[in-house]
Image (cartoon, rainbow, N blue to C red; front, top):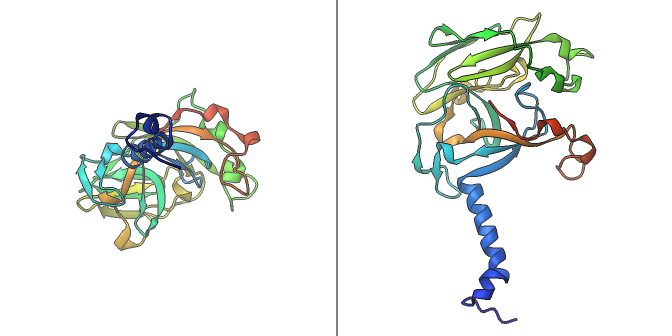
Length: 251
């Protein structure tokens, strides 16, 4: 087969058009947006297991391809934002958590109370029209018996410009964490399902904070969601799709 790379038809109707489409898709994924699937319930009730989300990668800067080195970078995430990042204990694994502490912040947590720079972070009862619990299932609480959902209380927390939902244990004391001072160019992360989240409170002391270069992007919205994925290939089971989660924004 004779391929004429200089012909207009090759780049518009031939194999060249497929190459260009693939190049555009890879460029968008490298520089702008990428899709991720939520693997656990650590961010309940904000995010559910098997939520499929889009992440804005450009918001924190632009890297060289296949590198952690930035061509340029922004001022970074703000308190309260939900971000995807490389796990400091194992950079091959990606985590999603909420940014709690910025560089220089003093963070302390005890029995559901979060303190930033010695100030208690505001919590309140959820608004009447907020129905996050409608999306929760008992199976999201393994190890807590047949009424695991009943062992949680649902509150709203406000951090920076963000108001979001958290789950806390009703009748069980949580161990204290901190105080920790966040190093320069690092961040302190926590999950919204506070007792069942493996995060900065529980990581190894020398890997407790997420360095800037491990940030991958800010979570934007849910584009697909389902109760279960297929057993053979990791895609949503069509009969278990949560249609009401489509285009659910992440705060």
